[in-house]
Amino acid sequence: MRAATQRDRGSAERPVDPGRFLTREADPEEPAAGRGAVDFPVAVVLPAGGSGERTGLSTPKQFCTFLTRPLISYTIQAFERVPWIERIVVVVAKESHSLMTDIVEKFNHAKVKIVHGGSTRHRSIFCGLQAFAETDESLLHKPKVVIIHDAVRPFVEEDFLHKITMAAKEQGASGAMRPLVSTVIATTSEGYLDHSLERAKYRASEMPQGFLYDIIYQAYQRCSESDFEFGTECLHLALHYCGTNAKLIEGPPTLWKVTYKRDLAAAEAVVKETLSQTACVMTEECAESLDLSHKLLKKLSAEDMLVDVIPNPKGVKGVSLTSNRNFIHISVNSSKLAQIAEMVMVLEETNHALLYPVVIVWVLLTVSEQSALSQRCEAASAIMDLARASEQKNILLYGVQINHSKVPEQWERSVTKLSQLAAALIRDRNPILTGQILQA
Image (cartoon, rainbow, N blue to C red; front, side):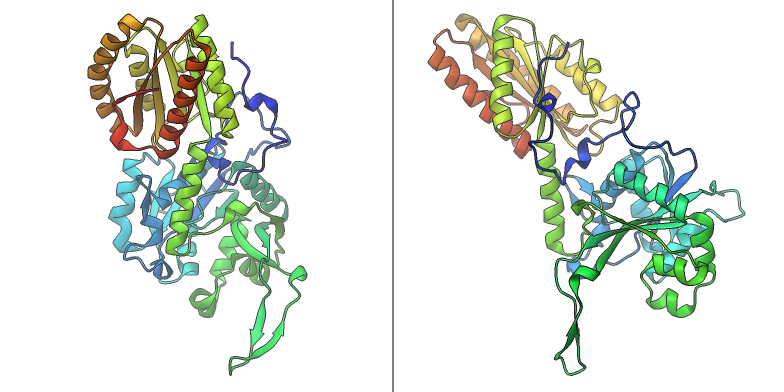
């Protein structure tokens, strides 16, 4: 049975985490409170044909890579993990088709169909919508609701997608909005202030936006050349050509868009921070191991980490993978890596490490001073090969040896050092240290 956890203490005292999207995977055994079932087909169109000129990079921003994954792969995964979304149409420039195909295959994006876009944003979105209206053998099932989203907004959560989808079904169109953070001004042709708008009366239009498919497709069929060439707002098209007034829903701060080069660094920082905030401590049911695990719980929780302690787990299959991305496995007087190898195998089979790297910290707890050195040598030779193989699967394996002491002050110092090492390994994800046995 699971021991007391930091999660069980409630979330009221923790701030809203803008990166929590990484741990918001759907749990089929846990119905979402307050959410109605989506019992109609839903699809997504991701326009991704932009050149990303404002980033100043030679590679379009949607294909820029951080933490070994291109930005667009993070966005696709945010939608693919939502079980009621059936299909994701990614619209790319013709010259990017091969690159996008490689991304889909490498990261096993099973719900994606790639189509070629047009010369402008609206033309590309229309190309994406037409993928559901073609008459050839590649016909896609026409959705009831289609969500249009930017490929460079990777931090979208299922709860908000549900709100957008249900509002679109009921109203015909829906969209995200955010409060303005700056005052909007109008200037004269000479560059002087003309007037300013009252900020409280206005909102910033954001993505995602949802539509009944028939409404938005009809709106695009009626578009003028000027709309296709200069327009950017899909909600305006639905209103202007179909008389459908969108329901606007205030979205979370995580809807920000990667626009400039510095935004890529910010996106990486959000992912890294989130990845470093959970840990599952798996331990054997002996006194020394349980004592160590609960001391780790206390110390890591003080570092604002969410920690589970699971005594004597029956392999990683008995652990909730939806809420854990990092594992601390305590072995007592044993340098055998069988359980760690099993963890690696299960993580690979479940694609748990496919998009985001997983950290495993193998803690070798020795309660006999005589065997400490021999076990360290044996472990050092065994862990390196497994770590090399694991790294190819996006799993980072580290080792830490800690010697149990009956002297309370010495034992406390060792546990403190172990917690600091584990937190640093999880936070920094340094590939140079994989396969090594560090000393706590």
